Each structure stands twice: as C-alpha cells, then as structure tokens.
Image 1 (cartoon, rainbow, N blue to C red):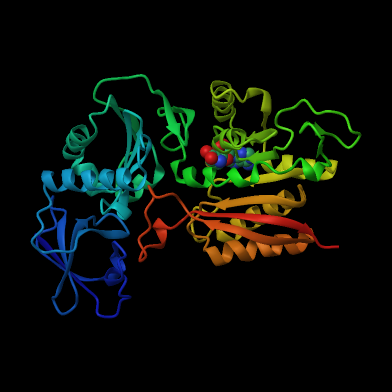
Image 2 (image 1 turned 135 degrees about the horizontal axis):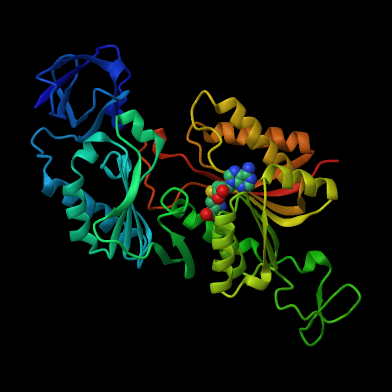
Length: 424
Ligand code: SAH
C-alpha cells in the first residue's frame, strides 16, 4: 500500500474527524503511484492515522475510509458499510421506504450517494476511488436492497474535479423511471431520470413535517368566530362553508415538485401557491396535488421567484406563511458575497409578504454559508424591511443526512421558522 506523510505544520483536521486530506497538507508519498489508490496516512513522525482513497488529480488528495490499520478495504467492507448505513435509517426512521440511504462521507463511504425511492436506487459516485469499485458497490446494493432497478445520476460537474466524466443512465436492465414514493404518509411522484439532482430533495423531510403546527389557527385572525352551534361565521355573521376556513394561506417559493405544498395541504392549509422557474417541476407538483386530493387548494405559478416576490410586494399582497427554499446560490466560497445579496433579496421581499404575526420559513442549502452568516443576512433583511423576527425553530437536514462534527460540508442545510412583526 502507498504511504503518505503529512506536514508537521497543518491543521489537525483529520484528528477532529474531517475525512479529507488536501494536496497542500502532504509532505511526501512513499511507494509507486500507479494504478494503486489505497493509501495509509501518517503524521510527520510516521504514526498511522487513517486509510483512504488517494487521487493525485484531485485537490482532495485523500478521502478517509477507515481509522484502523488492519481494516481490509474489500468487497465485504463495502457491503458492511452500506448495510450499516441502511440499518441506521431503519432504526432512526421506523418504517421508512424512501430516503437517502447512503450519504457519502457522513456514512463513512466518501463520495458515494445512494437515494432510495421505494424499490429503485439512484446513485452518485463523486470520488474516483468509488467509481473504480462500482461493480462491488452495485453488487452490495443488490444484496442489501434487492432493488427493481438502479439508475446512475453521475451527470454532475464536480466529477470533473476527480478526473471523472459526467454521465447518467440505467445500471443493468431498464425500468420505469417514474416512481411514486411515500413521505410522511403522502404520495410523491419522482422522476429519477429527468428530475433535478437524483429526483427529489429528501433532506427536508422532517422540516416539511415541522410545518404542521402553523398550518391551522388562522381563522380567528381573519375575524372568523364560531356560532352557538359550532358553525364558523365570518365578520358579517355569515356561515362559512369552506372546511379549511382555519387553514393558512401559504406561499411556497422555489416549490420544486411541491414537497412543502403537499405537507401544508395535509396539515390543513386553506390555499398554497407554488412558484418555481421549472415547468417540469411544476408539472409534477400539479400531479402530486391531484394524486393526494389537494388540487383545489393548490395553485402553480411558473416564473422567476425574484420577480414574483417583488411584484406581489408592489401589489400589497400578504400571506399567513411564506416559505423560501432556494437552490444553493453560493456554489463556491468566492461566490458567497453575490449569493448573500440573493438570499437577502428574497428574504427581504418574502418577509414583507408575511402578514403581521405570520410565519416566514427560510432555508439555505449552501454549506459556504454558516448559520451565523445566515442569521446575520436575515437580520439585515429584517432591518431593511422594517420587520422584527422572532425565532420559533432552527432546524437542519433530516436524520438520513448525518452530520460529521469535523466536516462542515456535511452540515449544509439551515432551516429557520420565524414569526414576523412590523416595526413602525
Ligand atoms: N422546496 C423544494 C426544493 C427546492 S429546490 C422541495 O421541498 O422539494 C430549488 C428549486 O428552485 C428548484 O425546483 C428550481 O427549479 C427552483 N429555482 C431555481 N431558481 C429559481 C428562480 N430564480 N425562481 C424560481 N425558482 C427557481
């Protein structure tokens, strides 16, 4: 096996649980760097620290696989790690049938993503060492999950940094790539071949469920009172027929296929407006609303959320709950300041659209943005919008997206729920 010796003057990142070694941390390499890519990592004094994949082409020179010297990284090792990752989901999310089954570094399988959509698996291999062992991995996946089919969504540019090509397609026999999954009791259609990323955003599952308490309790604020027979009456004393009279009016911005919209409706929302720039995402959102029996409470607007938010502010429109779940605006550290302006803009307009005492739900999935920077951005937006925000909840990604304390990259999702008040 190759041996790598690290520089004396380096941050003790690896010892703190970070699973990567950068080229700049390497003092010297012992052995013949040919086709071999398994390496043992040693400190400057020669003490063994870890084993990993070595990739001379990547800035991430080593991805840690194991912390013991006597571990053999073979087919059985992959099978055990994949099985352990899945067992952990079954333990923590009882009865789960669809979720992220393997989350790369955070499941000690660096660069391997496996999303399970009922009996279909979608995989991404973002490290050369994983790609090299793909047959072992597919074999292990077949053994652990007995899937109806496996689809590869390796059409991601980060693969180039590892010296890998971009591609996607069936692994083995073809199958129907439209899959109906279950999430929190809802039916959700996922297109694993054409959908964004691997088809669906599993990381918000528990956050979608966290909407529940805020989806009802709005009737009273609209002046609705209960009559002596328990019948809801409007401000003029007229009986209200809509069974969702107490439900929230919700704006679901960056709705994608309607994950938040479906949950909002299930929890009693009166009306949900989905906004997304993607026609295909909205088409699926509409189908999802139909399948779950929510079509009459959902509406769909195709367009740029930045324009939509500004337009609705100009019109003086208000919602009880505004949800903002944008894509990662900051794809790199360099892009952070431009991204911050984007985040601030949508949040500033978004909070203006919340009626006083209403709810703003704001997320960011960019790991370059720390929680502190996220809150700072929101506070600045609140100042400019003349609003006061009261934090109800700060959440992260769900349990199928574990976080390694030493690795900020695994802790990317911020999800905050605020009450919004006016500041005169
Ligand atoms: N809330 C979704 C996930 C959102 S992903 C869920 O729970 O599943 C981000 C979404 O933003 C994508 O669907 C993408 O099409 C959309 N999007 C990206 N830029 C946009 C823009 N400028 N305006 C509106 N939608 C945009």
